[in-house]
Amino acid sequence: MSGANPVAAAAASSATAVPPRRPGVLKRLLREPIAALALAVVVLLVLAAVLAPVLAPTDPFDNDLASAMAVPGTPGLLLGADGQGRDMITRLLYGLRATLLIGAASVLLGGIVGGAAGFIAAYYKRVDGLLMRLMDVLLSFPAILFGLAIAAIFGPGIPAVILALSIATVPLMARIVRSAALVVMRQDYIEAARATGMGDGRLIFRHVAPNCLSPMFVFATLRFGQVILLGSALSFLGLGAQPPVAELGSMAAEGRGFLFFAPHVAVLPCVVIFIVVLAFNLLGDALRDALDPRLRV
Amino acid sequence: MLRHVLQRLLTTVPVMLGVLLIGFLLMQVVPTDPAIVRAGPTATADVIAAIRTELGLDQPLYVQFGIYLWRLLQGDLGVSIINNVPVTQELGATIGPTLELMFASLFWAIPLGIGLGTVAAYFRGSVLDRAITALSVAGGSVPVFFLGLMLIWLVGFQWQLLPFTGRGGPLWTADGWKAIALPALTLGGVFVAPVARMTRTAVLEVLGAEHVRTARAKGLAERSVVLHHALRNALIPVITLIGLQIGFLLGGAVVTETVFSWPGVGRLAVGAILSADFPMAQGTIIVLSLGFIMVNLVVDVLYVALDPRMRGA
Image 1 (cartoon, rainbow over the protein chains, first blue to last red):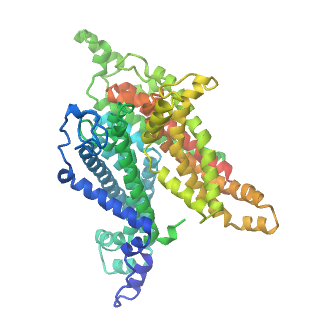
Image 2: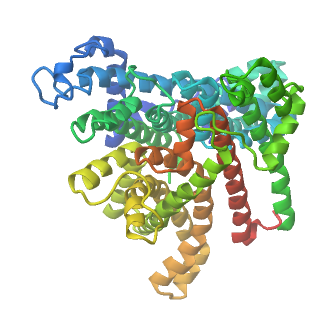
């Protein structure tokens, strides 16, 4: 859990020397063909999502009932049309955009709150026990229960999904950050910084946090895949994105009604979800190997 | 051992109370007045006021929470505002099918996952290991509803082999097991990958242990080394990890029930939330949460019971 420690320790022991630089993470990552492929797919997916308004051939809500359920390959509709005659390419691009946004918002929000909790628990021994017991309680409930409860309280919608997935992410990030921070805080340079009279906040931000970044980053990447699966499942159930908004999970749910006449309407969004999750899982595994080979199994 | 169980039970109490408090507060923020709902649309203000007193709604919140707990202890979770059926009655009818689906899924997914994981670990680095590992990474990336929809389309619709909506009756009847086949394949299907991955890691760790080397050194048959010395010890962490994955299984069950119109608690909960049936939603969420806390407790106790090294720790 302490990927950067040897470097940090070396840097601290010889303050005047230039800290030894490790070969770039990106370079090591690209040496593995699968990792390079996963990274390329992730970059392409993110680009497609960001550029959806530019790339999409039509407006996501433009429907032409004459071409409803058009099969892929129909002239002008490369991937066909959905039950309401909306271009599947457009819907998939916007759906991907919404799905990735839900995932990113959840990991970011849960990661920041969980990370803060982890640093506080590691740094302030007095609240450590209480805070981590609270995290254990959160951890003991599956994400689906948060999803159901929050949708019941605030009503179904994208904010409910983001809130539920963020809460489910908080205890996981807190644990990872706490254990990484505890290792970092045993280093001499932390003692040295403290001796110079540095305040708690600055010490955490300037010296502890930067050295915990690699496990945080690995976790965030792997968590992203899981959050996409959970978020699209909640939307599939009708608890997340609401029609006519294009979101991959709710698109699959809509397509379920046409499964026997036009399977592509349900199958295509599912395939895109699969590719997104697989790419992030592979990238996360590769990042873990590249950043901290000791975690390899 | 007993002390450990009691300790765990004690730490569970505040969590359970927390769940009940959240469930209680859920009813406070919803925009409907239970007194008006129960009184019906034609009731006069006097009648509503009388029901309000009867339900204790004119009391302070903490008293209401007490009344709520008391009613809960008597098995009263309220009445559905959609069809007036008691929540406990609906729950009683749906818990069985959900458990049935979960057990049917684990019944094939756990042995297969453990088998695949053991083979992958034993032939570490081989083509077989890589294939199994690749399969479990891919399997862990498939949305449950994708697998379900594909099975419905292929096996149910194209091949017309198995039914794909609802429950067909008790499992010992032909209709019963035919109806559960596709839902159990779906839910179990997403469970094989994590079990295989956990088993592989656990077996790899044990295969490198000294007692396995000793077993080999004294000339035991390879089969005996793997099955009796390696796998048996690896199973302890695997069983615990499977227990901890029950939450994942529950999430999958909710989706699977919806896809196959399986009459379980998950489908009931989702339907209640979507139709704004607050008492029903509250009841299902409370029961699912409490059930979940109990499962965690059992897994924790089992872990200590299975692994003598954990005793006294």
